[in-house]
Image 1 (cartoon, rainbow, N blue to C red):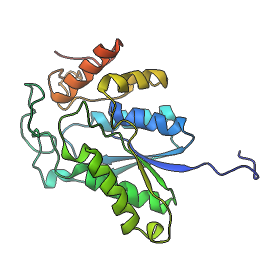
Image 2: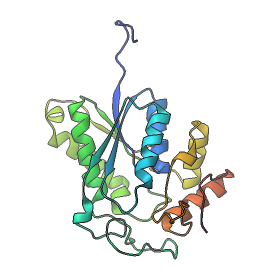
Image 3: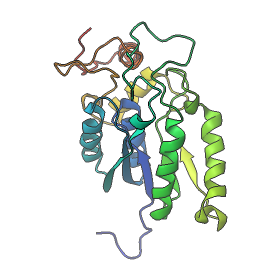
Image 4: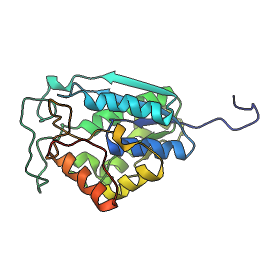
Length: 231
C-alpha cells in the first residue's frame, strides 16, 4: 500500500487491441511509472483472437483495470475486418487497403478520452506507428497532434486547464524496433496477435499485411517470432 506522504501514482488509459504494438505501448506506460487502465474495444471484428490476446496482455503487464467495451462496427461495414470482404494477401501496397476500418482510431481515441476524463487521468497511450504500417490515415503524427488539441477543447478537464497528453511512443519506430522493445521490456510477444485472417486451425495466415510486417520486423531484429504461421 502506498505511503500517505508519497505522490499518488499517475493514471493512464492505454488503448490495448491485443496486437504487438499496443502491447509494447502498454509496457512503456508501465515502465514510465503509470498505473495502466487498459481499454479494449470489441468492435465485432470478424475474429476474436485479438480480444483474447488483450486480456492476456493486460494480466501480464499488471493492468489495474481492463475494460472490454462492446461497439458493433459490423453494423457499418466498409472494411475487410468488419464485413464479408476477403483480406488481401498480396503484400503491402501504396494505397490504403480494404483492412482500414473507417475512422477507427478517431472513434477509439474518443472512447479512451472519455474514460480518461472519468478517471481524472491526464495521459492516454496508443500504439500507432507511422513507419512500418499499412498506410492508415489515422496512424499519422498529424492526426495524433490534432486529436490532442481536440481533447483539450472537448472536455471539462481541458476547459478547466488540465493538460491532456496523447502518448504515441511507437510513432517513429520500425517494426524491428518495436520487436526489440518488446524483448527489452521482458514482454511475451507470443501473447500478442497481429493476423487479420486467423486460420481454422488457430494459426496466423502469414500472408496478410499485418503478418508480413510482423514477420519482417522480427526477422530484421534478429529475434524469434513466436507466432504460429500457416505460411
